[in-house]
Length: 415
Image 1 (cartoon, rainbow, N blue to C red):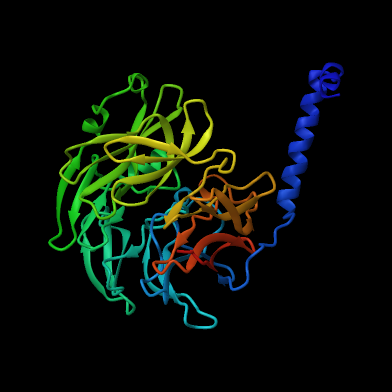
Image 2 (image 1 turned 90 degrees about the vertical axis):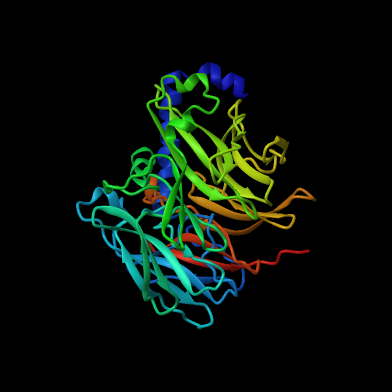
């Protein structure tokens, strides 16, 4: 029957049918079909009428080590790019006390250097839950502000922004946030800073010194591929410290002459030596380290098929997770033998949070959310699931009543 219909329906009619289907799906999504989130028992919503409450990326946990506090950002603005406005709205950084029945946002500081996907890289500094750090723009420079928690006293200001901080709170990685914004709106900052970084540098948070790890030119020279010859733009994203290791990782990304994005995951030590192009056989999108050697990566293989794949530092590809079960991109984190991840919105705007048993190869939906089509492009609201240090809670960013909100869900990770 399908073959028969293909033969008798003119191509022009097929185009009209497809457009009508697309309009119908868009109308359903715009109208908010099935827009009520399906949350499990015990879920908590951190929301403020007229404000956006969110945290940002999944590579940082907003929870304190004891689970009592959760960091958050608050901004009063429309669902537009902060970089499209002559004077970007100031975003507040602060927290909620989860021991309260109806916790309210407590503001600790403000910044004009922020974006919808990664906020201002707000994070805990060290293991004592007594300091936080976030990026600011001051004196025509990107900087990072260290304040005491929970009283909000400014303790120090570093002369560079931070992307990632090590577990001890002693070292940080910095990169070029202006360049990142130009190439990937929603991840960098629009201001033109006097101290834009060339490559990656390591900041000693204690004595406030900075040493170069690797330049962008040196990164380009690491086993260059043929499609780099006509590349229009090279930049760095997703820099991080490998857990319990003296090595770091980052994504090297470049746009070819047709503006197509290519990227690879590279690891090296903190002095910029012993580099390893760990992931080059697929186009990596997201990652999570299982230990100081093994990393789980999402992305597209050379055939354009999506997959989750496990790699070992300095060795390479180990194995793929089942593609028939994990057939969409997401933002993974792994605890013991379980992976927590999410999906991007379906045609109806539906996003899923799920847990995957890596031993039994079983997937279970934990919660379902709805993202209106007004949240798109760099303003989209990915779930970005973040696991608490006690492994008993998950925080996600979601859309509630036309604004961003943080949702906290209970979770049980079996031994």
